[in-house]
Image (cartoon, rainbow, N blue to C red; front, side, top):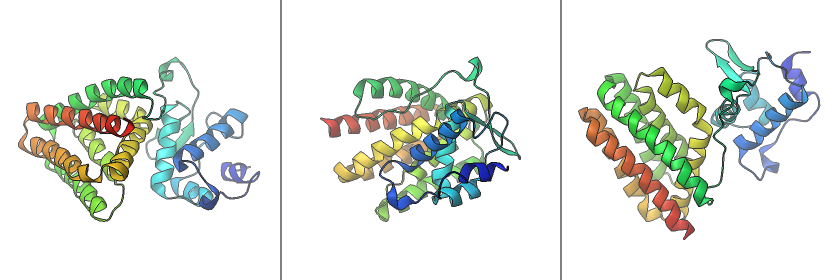
Length: 247
């Protein structure tokens, strides 16, 4: 039986109308359960992003975030030009950066220590190696965030694309692979940070955008020191904005 049939034969198509949780988490949990139960076996190729969008009645961005969680958990792996496959867990992918609520301040502090270290190092390297095409991608995400703010949208997807484009500008596959592994957790922090700021401190949105602009300007100028400092300042301020809200 084709995998697509195995995924849908035992349940009706999902409907967004009945959901109360975060959609990527729900989809990731559903696919994880299918892997654990044997509906999906090691070596099976998952349906395409388009098919998953149809099956779960969600956007491609939601599906991609769900798949990134499965990749982070070591349950699936992407093969260039082929698709996403169920993979065997082993000691090489035992590390797991677990998702958590930013209201857990201890976990937030630990997460930010790691993310700041990685982000600052990546931004410093990107300032040295970025190409004109890299700068276009970073600028495109920056403008996307501006439109999101003007349209009263959260802009978390554009925010993530901005930081991901910086990581890709390092042209270091180890940085890129590590950040792909941390993608689900990084998205979770970005989403919650922006949501808290938009809901409770809308007056700070311009300050957040100024921080992104400072990072871009330093990258454009090839100023490694300024880029690293701007990245550190942005992430530390993001964590502080969450602490202010929780307090």
